[in-house]
Image (tube, rainbow, N blue to C red; front, side, top):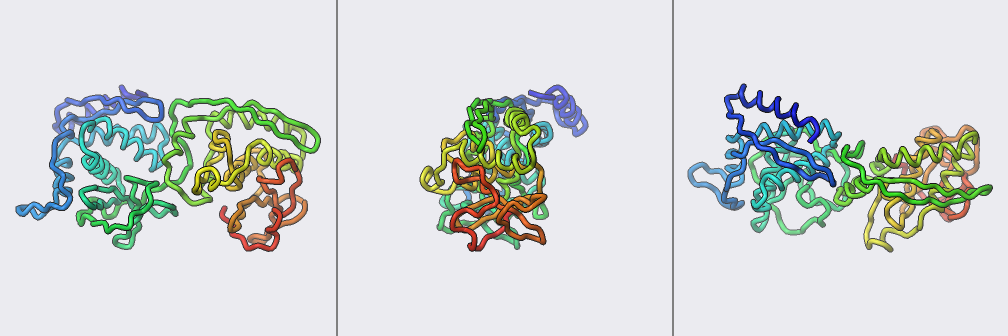
Length: 394
């Protein structure tokens, strides 16, 4: 309900200026355990027979295109203005904007079919500036959006030289059956949809406390830290993005304000070398290790926040956490090093500390975040990886 009075005033003025009656309604939209009021004109909620395969003999349009034009003739702008206002207020990236839109459509168009709601989302994403496509098969309609991002385990199509991602079911395995593409394109010059995790929605946090226990060669530590369960919930349905994107995901304010001061306190007066050893001890020994395949039966990459919630984590997850903490607490140049079955970290330290890889003219010394579990030693390759080929992913 933040800034609702301002939104109401602006939209009422907009309705007057455009000759529309000011009969706007308010819809309370649930969004990650928070609630926000959106404004809309009830005339956008109408019944419509959606038959993807049907062509109107008089207009030559499919029922899907006719649906778009019918909604376009209604007073759709107040809802879009509300959505855009909350995009700015909540710092929504493109994916979370779509999630917010989907929640809004689910509330406002409650009782309408899934196909109806998908088409409404299609309309509003197109009006928000994205290049979209509708595909269909066996009476089911899918929303696809143009994206340049590297994604995994998500259905995609190619059209007019662009890649379109099925965001109706982002983590559903790609079907082998043939899809039909609607030849009506509302916004062919639309912008690409980005899945980059630069920030998380500014919703009510849900702090959970966890005790971290780890030790270095000289001392044992026990830290009480808090992470944000709301962020965990946000990631449950997030599409599988490129490995380096998880490394760039920020810590939540809840985790930052809890963990970083505690680590700064215990690192006070210590050299960069000692700080790196403390971070290695933390990521190696404060969490239980199992591979994704052992726990989930599939790959499940995590952002740093998720390492604190789930019982087990693997090398990718601990690398993401080490990457975030080293950036905040030590601040040396670093790279993420990906082998075929392992991910680790290289840090460009001020002086030699052991084994290194060379990248773009610099030496990056190995600081493996995964193991050995009770060791604080850095500057060595994980066992068996010294001569294996690798790729730098960040």
